[in-house]
Structures are given as C-alpha cells and as structure tokens.
Amino acid sequence: MQVFTALVKGGAIVPDDDVELAEGTCVTVLTGGPEREVELTASDEEELLESIREAERGDVVTAEDLLRRLAR
Image 1 (cartoon, helix red, strand yellow):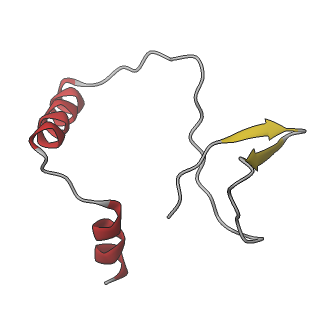
Image 2 (cartoon, one colour):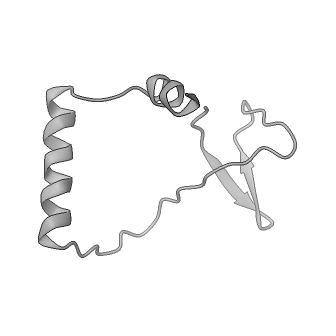
Image 3 (cartoon, rainbow, N blue to C red):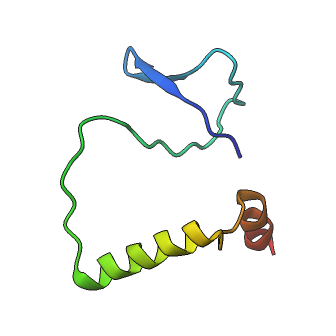
C-alpha cells in the first residue's frame, strides 16, 4: 500500500514525480479542499469520539496488520 500526493492535470490524476504505479493499478482518491459541514447522529458522534479515544490510547492497528488480517 502506498500513500502519496498528486495533482489533477488535464482532467487526469498525476502522482508526484517519485511515485511509480503500474498500468491498471486501482487507486482510492481522497481530496483536500474546502471543508464541508458534516452532520452526525448522536450514535455516530459517540462512535467517532470512542474511536478518537482509542487512537489516543494507542489502541490501533497498523496498515500492515490490517492487510494481513484481510488476506486470511
């Protein structure tokens, strides 16, 4: 798994110069930009806050561990 930045040029997503992707690579794109208001239900907000508390305690899963678990 790679995390990298890219720019849109001529309607295409162009990764930074040091990023090499094989033709046909499937990617997921998250964009930055103007923040938009997000409305959460009380339940969703509590779940988000609990997740933040878990991360602050260091109760996290590395990307490598996650991918290993998903491969099983």
